[in-house]
Length: 351
Image 1 (tube, rainbow, N blue to C red):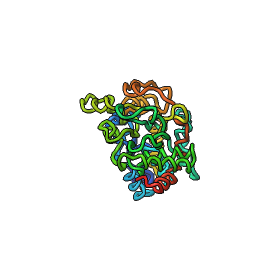
Image 2: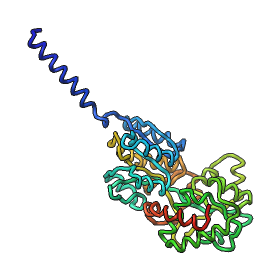
Image 3: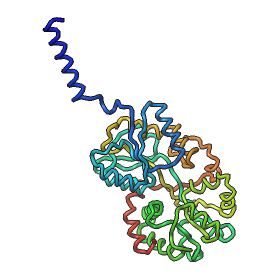
């Protein structure tokens, strides 16, 4: 090879090497996705593996509760590797939006599949999140001690006939904050505060434990009536464990407010992280979560209702619960009311 050609060869090679160093392969082509998730359900394994099988995109997961994820995102700042953030409960999703964890995205597929009341309203920065599954806030009661007609609305739980019968989890828990936020939205703050005072007066014991603990306390007669998210009850209904079946035999459940506003519902949802390095893969993943396949996983794998109404439900537990009238309130508005809800509960001593 002549010296001139050899010089040209090394010049081209050096140029290509520099291009590779200074202009690396796009992160979008890396075929991976970093998922920060507060969901910790074993059945989600099939959901994630199916996405990878369909797209070839590997999912790297960080799983923790919502508060831990929020602290991690704050500490990472603009350097966060998160692509998608999944959280449970409207209050937590609203807080994540306020903390600027999400970025604006536009997906005609998501907007066409997910009802408007189950997704965010864009804030000043245009950031967005979407609900992908729902759960209902049910009333469970002790069949031997309580007349179901006396506890068939949320409002009746605070009435004098239920004094000494009511059990709930902590008023600071997002499930309670979202319920209170919904009541503020439809009844106003003053009426909701009066209801909360009645709930405190009717407590069988100080609020403690999770939703399954409330169900067990009702079955044991420690409480006459309690609130629970639907999927906790369905787990017991579907269980083959004799102890769980013994609990189920002692309790009844009610869809509250069927003649008025409807039963309170909440969501699990998420959005694309503000500084997502793989934003196209992130949108692809959210689109997948709204697909019939993923919606089926939510319903039949984790006892949640799909947000896409056309999806057929095969889950026997959901079938046992049957159909119901759901509250038609913007989930975003419920989340927005959480600060007022917490202040209200603090004022009335709802611990």
